[in-house]
Image (cartoon, rainbow, N blue to C red; front, side):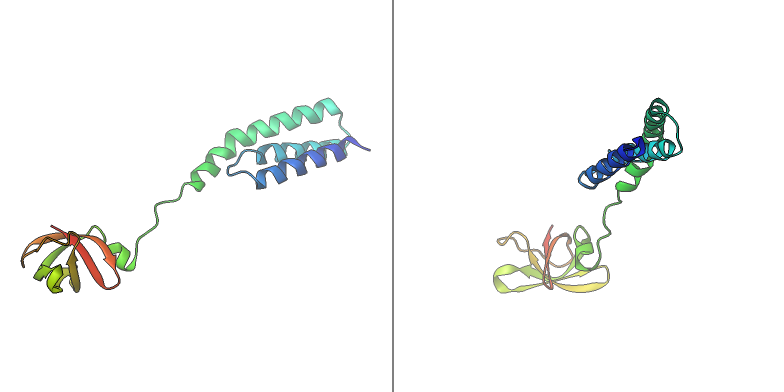
Length: 143
């Protein structure tokens, strides 16, 4: 069995291991082992292929890992629809009284049914409130 077969097995093991990790940890070693396998197949000695394995693995770690880690950090998801209204300010149009089932607010030009997040609190028209939650078609607000 040639030395290149051993390097292919090592590369395969690192590749399988990489698939089971949550980061770019073992892929540099898999690439280094694959490069060493190619060199061994071309007939270079074991010492040179081992040195190539170390050199390529180190180069990939130093050059590609920072790039891979940057791409893993995704920006926060963009909120859309009703979820985008949470945290917005609203103007009370109709008095909000949970016990009476009353209340509307204007959020960004749209009129919404509103209830106070605090059941005992009544909010008068003209007050500025903040949308805390959206339940169905009703905005839960706090002054």
